[in-house]
Length: 233
Image 1 (cartoon, rainbow, N blue to C red):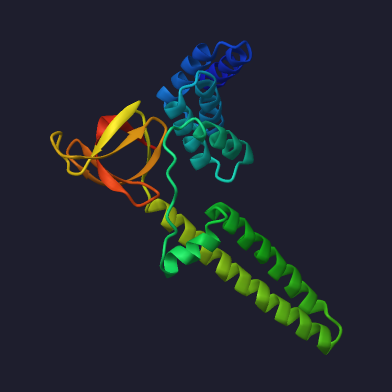
Image 2 (cartoon, rainbow, N blue to C red; image 1 turned 180 degrees about the vertical axis):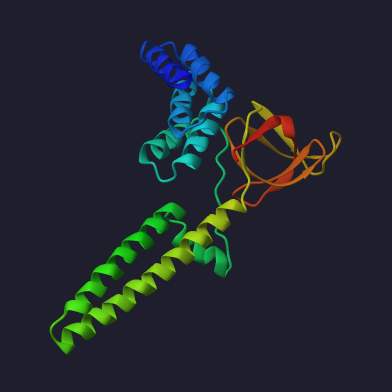
């Protein structure tokens, strides 16, 4: 009840143009561990209006994690990402698993789960048709269609599991420091490998004390102080 009141108050403040006030209300909800895609989405919108790129991108990513495939979140995230200074081009991944993910990953795992449900309903309807069919030819047609639908269930479930496990293996984070030098080694006196700016999305591949080893979409790697980023998951 309190969360709903804070959410409504945040929305009212947002509509009035008091984006800082809206942020305070939404952040208060999250501080009480009452997260939702709607709260993260609206919080991202408020930070976007305040031109705070890193919090905007971070909260849109959190919203998308809870509501994958949401067109509204994806569109607003794309707008926020245009504010990011770093323009990093992803390198195409080689290998069979990456090739499979390039196909199956076009849809979220929950989308594949719904496809499996649809095929399941189809199997039941086709079985009913097979059971009540009055001729041998119709029974054969229904049987073959039922087999194809059953195969669709299996493939959809496999695709859902594959996409989920692939995504779970990633540990994305957003750079929050305005400018940060990424080191070649986990040491403050190490050589600078490259520089990143607020809002850039990276993948955390290793943690060593106060250091995080990160990888970029172009496969560049380096070490960064953990205080310079926030992990999405």
